[in-house]
Length: 401
Ligand code: UDP
Ligand code: GLC
Image 1: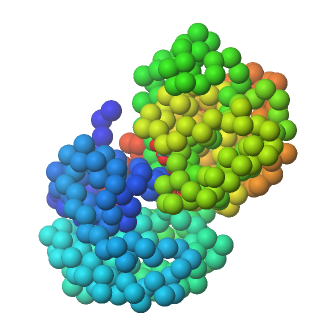
Image 2 (image 1 turned 45 degrees about the vertical axis):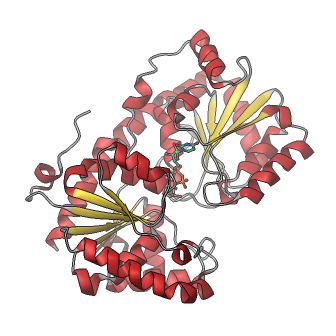
Image 3 (image 1 turned 135 degrees about the vertical axis):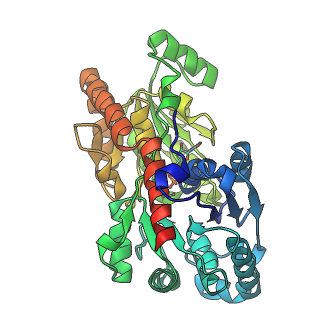
């Protein structure tokens, strides 16, 4: 694939960029940054606020990574901001200083998560660099505590030069929070490298059976795959409940509790047991080869019970040429058009999900039509190349402000 070069594409001299992300884990925001930071490997650097496999993945692309961590700051969680901040103050101050000192060596500061936003933007009086924030969340009261929303609002109004949201849904929620006009916020959807899925070629029934054998999956049953980290709002419980309404369908849960949601993971096992579907639910943990796992499925389901800010897994399912069923809220409705390139269901409605699975199972032609259109749309509207071009342009525009 011919990736755009930052300098030429931006129409400016080569810009250097310091990226900051709070997580060492591999979540969607980190996968989005992975490709962008890879593009800037020779003239950029990534600061992470914690260690983890994300570091290794960045370094494998030749990206220079520095971890600037603080245990107290890492311990601040979404809903427990009130007192956490006080205890973390000294750590915050030293991280702000360390990031600002780094930022001075670059043209632009690119912040990829909310803690990165706070720690990177607070240092603006010291580094005086243009700040761009890539927003990956729907900043609603449902998801984020009052203190966090007030801080984000203040940062966006006073410290950030450009906000780029991962969907119109995320942009609209931020506009509602901050009072900014929606047209002052850019929207750049994530891009997916669809070529990774091409290497599988066209798989016939025999190839799929062999692939399932390799992955340790049952060969001759109808498989629904749910991809994503294990977390209550990702709705794995809805998929298990839907499974109980379906006969001889199996469910494969691909993903792990990345941010400590182990109690929920345990609840999922208990739920499967209670509903008598243990034999038909396969918990396979986090996988590095998502394209192969997607190719092994008959249908991909997405079950988030709250509006999904974007949903990379949905586009990946489309890129794998699989029919995708997803919950109709947030960024998802910017990706899926019902009965055209996928199937939409209401949030948290296990009956509707089970009915949708049954419909697609009973109509292979319909399922194939949706999958083919999904693949075409993923390639046209959510290409990695398009994502990198738009982001490079946003970075260049921010540098010029
Ligand atoms: N993913 C992965 N291995 C897994 C489960 C998920 O690599 O076992 C990837 C998946 O392919 C996708 C990302 O994690 O690119 C999840 O991103 P998404 O935007 O769907 O959700 P998020 O977790 O960021 O809310
Ligand atoms: C976040 C969101 C997810 C989105 C990803 C990449 O993790 O939860 O919906 O796809 O960021 O922007």
